[in-house]
Amino acid sequence: MPSPKARSGGAGGSSGRYEFMSLNRSPPPPALQRQGSDPTAARLRAADSPTRRRGSGSSTASTSSTGGQQLPEEDCMRLNPSILGIALSSLLAIDLWLSKRLGVCACEDSSWGSVRPLMKLVEVSGHGIPWLVGAAYCLYKSDSAAGQEVMLNLLMALVLDLVLVGIVKAVVRRRRPAHNRMDMFATFSVDRYSFPSGHATRAAMCARFLLAHLVLAAPLRVLVLLWAAFVGFSRVLLGRHNVTDVAFGFFMGYCQYNLVEALWLSPVMFQSMMGHLE
Image (cartoon, rainbow, N blue to C red):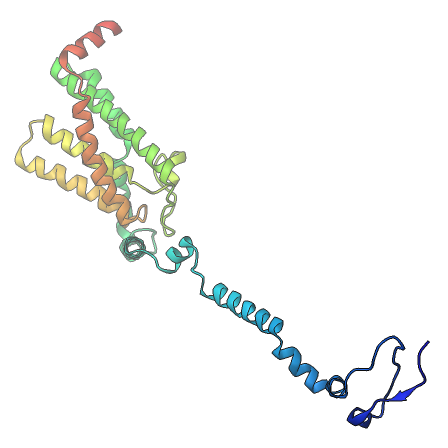
């Protein structure tokens, strides 16, 4: 049963509050009563307690460890790109800028729009269909075994070019330049992609083939080289391809001829094939 209301003793009574005290517990010393009645002192004691200090130290340590931890490796690579990535990005930007500047025949309203019909004629001269039809016709009309052998290998080279270029285009899937007009001659599904230039690969391969297996005078040999270069350059002027598409196409066509030479059909093999067909 609580005792009657009693005023706190000593200096603690200055607060003017009455407290109930248990009969089974002795009253605290006056000094503790004074400390307990002062809220400012209670806050200071709580701030200076070892538990509080340990907690604040652990939180500070966790904050410092969180703030000082290293970023993941992929984030570091994204924030610090490699020299190769910067070089490729710069090359791509230069390629797009230069291709747009050189696309002077992309439409009739371009600066060189008046020569667009001539560029389209050059485009047809490097297309695969005229070359396939011409090689097949020469193979049919040829009377000598040597001529038939050359035309048969040329036909095989043209088919190989179509297959390899189609595979690379389907894998890379680079879109054609934005200023290109899709009014090309006899296009197929993979022709909506730009890399590499099929005209450039065909021109480089056929130029090497003709110079190696046909007896041509010096002016005609120069004319073949100029035709191949002009076919590739016309692709950029018409806005069909970027500069890197044509450059890689020339390289790919040059290497394709080496593959054709490795797969060359000899006269003996050609005669056996013709015997089976007959």
